[in-house]
Length: 335
Ligand SMILES: NC(=O)c1ccc[n+]([C@@H]2O[C@H](COP(=O)([O-])OP(=O)(O)OC[C@H]3O[C@@H](n4cnc5c(N)ncnc54)[C@H](O)[C@@H]3O)[C@@H](O)[C@H]2O)c1
Image 1 (cartoon, helix red, strand yellow):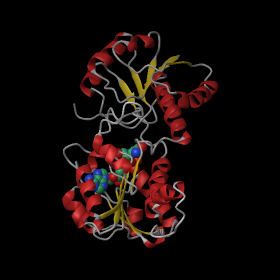
Image 2: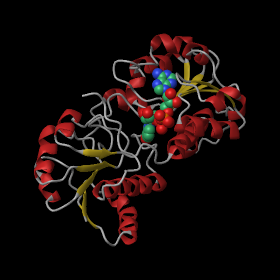
Image 3: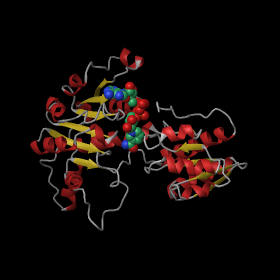
């Protein structure tokens, strides 16, 4: 049995090697190349391919793989929106993803950034760097004094709730589909409007459904929020109207903003702009602010998560090859 692993980064190699050592009957060939119509030939003689890329899995790419008899495709990530599912179906592909790899990675990142914003940590760091060692006016807000609101009480939202409660905060939540256990504990309010009007920290943990919840947090919603609240988006850039947030930061309506996902992130994040200068001036503006934490979609990026992504994708691929039920096949959309 042979699996080709595309787009392998150096940080993924230890997990790959560990899996290989545990599966001596499987040959795993890895390449840093992404999967394209041209690089599909690297899969010649393989039984399956493991992949992770922002680049589209186009009909052409899928056809190039299928021509080589490779139709077992396992994503190392969650998102499947860059797959041409109509083509994949016609070509009889089997596809899996890794829907849950480490909710803690993302929740923990959000929690750390929230506490940093409330502590005005960036402000204090800049002061200390300049040897300005005065206390005032950089006073911290304790997390336990905040009411924290969570939109989306799935895997990540629930861990975030637990961490915030660990700090002593009061937590409220909104979800379209309520979790019965959380419901019994009385966390839910009935609408997003009700939630935002009561909370000091608002954190989004919902998927983005194009055309359905784009700019779920826009100028109107921000106007309904409490003054001096902190907004957290570690979910998907399109959920938040960035210009509206900038206006609210300028007016002082928002106390701070945590942004790991950005509506203009494709082609911008995970690139080094330090030499040529960041072309996206709006993003540069946000990064420069002392009450904003921008990270380039790295909330998930931990050793724990990377290991899960690599090894679970290989487990899925091997199951497809052996004709067994894969642990997490993708739910095929209507095509
Ligand atoms: N920044 C990162 O690195 C990173 C990594 C992984 C996931 N994410 C994001 O985090 C999101 C949440 O992940 P998860 O694993 O917790 O997902 P999940 O599916 O376990 O939970 C999502 C929850 O959102 C609820 N929901 C869906 N639409 C809603 C709406 N319009 N209003 C209110 N609630 C709604 C669902 O009922 C569900 O309870 C993902 O969709 C993804 O966008 C970000």
